[in-house]
Structures are given as C-alpha cells and as structure tokens.
Length: 149
Image (cartoon, rainbow, N blue to C red; front, side, top):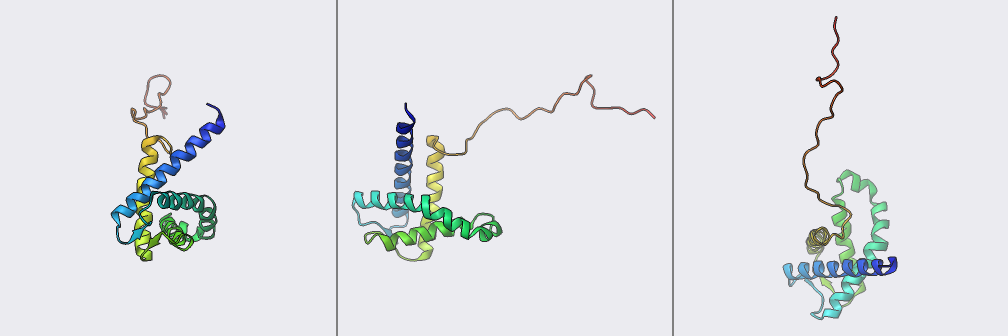
C-alpha cells in the first residue's frame, strides 16, 4: 500500500472514531448536547472538531502550558471543552447547554476516542504483555563483588 493511501485510511479511521465519540457524548448527554439529528450534521461537526483539534488546540496548549504543568495535564480537558463550545459558535445546528456539559462531553469524547484508538491500533501507545524483566547476571555466578579486609 502506498504512503498516501495509508495516510488517507488513517485519516478516515480517525474521523470515524471521532464521529462515534461525539455521537456517544450526544447520546449520554442527550438534551444538553445536540447536533440537529441529521447524520451529515454529525459528520460535519466531528470533521470540524478534528480540524480544531489539529490546528487550534496546539496553540491553546502552548498558551496554557503553565496551567497544564500545574494541573499535571488535566487542564487539557478544559481546552477540549472550550473547543466544543467554540464548535457551537461556528455551527448553528450544534448546541451545548453550558460549559459544564461541554466539559463532560469533552471528557466522554476523550475517553471513548482513546479506547477506540487503542482497540483499532491507531494510537501512539501500545500495550504489551510479557514476562517481567530479569535481573542482570553477574560474571562468576556470585551475587556481586566481595571485598576481603
């Protein structure tokens, strides 16, 4: 498979995962997050959220770097919630009631996206199961150097 086809398939897989995650957040937080009940609205919203995550999110992460360090990265959820709120400004059919529901929606989207990315092998992290590491062997078969006095 050539590299461009591989990139296109990876993008399509990421978009589908993001769409499923947004759909699950809408289902879980029904009546608080909505997309207008049309499939194309959901696809547009998840596509635009992906674009915001790719281009705007890194800038916000850089600006909020001291807060990210202070909160050990948990401020990322606030940034994700802000992007979800910004999506309501850009798209007239996408609606989030309050920032609290945007925060919960961002948390749900993040958890589902991570789980689906790990399950599909589309993540930067991998899980391996194996035997625990063995201690290094010392030459001579002893337990280490012996000093005679």
